[in-house]
Length: 266
Image (cartoon, rainbow, N blue to C red; front, side):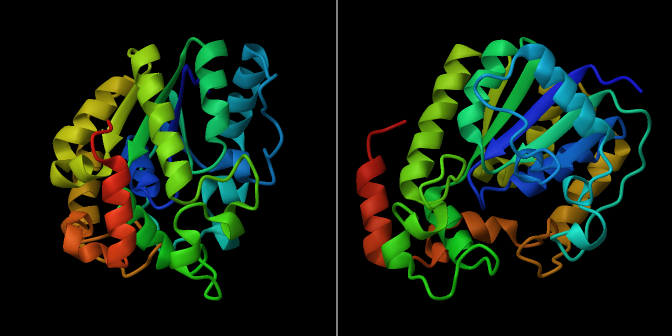
């Protein structure tokens, strides 16, 4: 088994990373890993001192791992239903993370053959989605107190990237990486992925060195035409409604504050 391409998908929680991950996972030659740095199997295995050889070894171990959480199988599977894809010998390891973004610049710097995709979602909808995610937002919290810094969720841990302040920090990081590593880092807006899924996936497949397949086209159709009603699922027939401003359902004062602070910025 030979994997020659290592690719990370990074995005803030509730930004569409799961859907994007499965879109790329639909390629037969991809081994897909779900939040490996958060898993018990690989937590603590990478930090800012990890060298290139250690990272390559780590990625190979991820590729070969049978861990249920990383593979989203068995009782560790979070979504009620998950797509199933025909696979061949993997040539690409692709993982997705909503945490540990502080490691991304280090990965880009020390591993010249590592590529990454950053996905950014309108923060109004990202926050509304977080508020409505039963495993992510404690019902004893209030969005009015948590939306900006997510102090109760982040708990001061560098690995956590919840709330508007961290969204701003992460988006700035992505813009910097896109400028610094234009050949190995690419940025996509969730709204563009929803608006033109086929062309967006074609571009990302090309970035990863993969060709579009019939299996991917079939999953694009299924994931945008069937709604499984699962907040952690990837089958959403009404995705276009999640990028329409009136649908974000945030308090007007929060919406106004976000719009004011982002006005005139990239």
